[in-house]
Image (cartoon, rainbow, N blue to C red; front, side, top):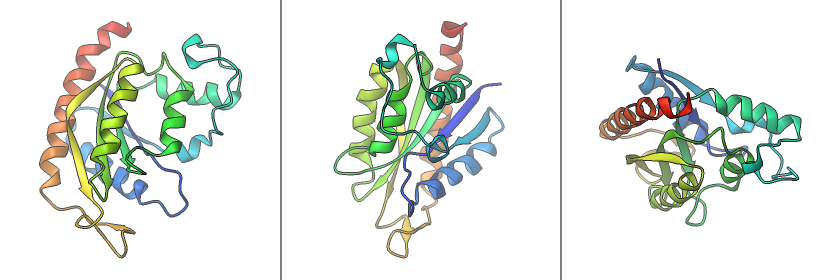
Length: 186
């Protein structure tokens, strides 16, 4: 069975990212087509990139990097849940992506974005980043609006039901690609 990580994209103390990620996890687990796990970048406690060599060398020096590599390595694909900050993704998510390299290679990724512009620009930026990490991103993304999918000054996540269709389509595409890429890693 495929192993898919749902990765949070924020470490802010008042984040709503974890609410969105838990919703994705709950919906994904209903499918029964993969083993879905929540991976919270906040738990990784990664400082601003502090490795002496680029990740492409695979010569990780720090214990936190090695632990992060061990987490990422075990999955066949990822759903990245990203906020949009200033037309891009969060600094914490970009930092987490930059820490390792080979562990991301030849794996599939899908996106769930949210923000005032539905996270579209953050997802588009992430597509460029994951391409450099040799990941295959799927076409369909879930795009959530801070104005219609959140309440109480954007502090409580209340997604519209129609997002379930795009989430299901994205997960179907993700699992197809994750399965197709698996032989490249063996």
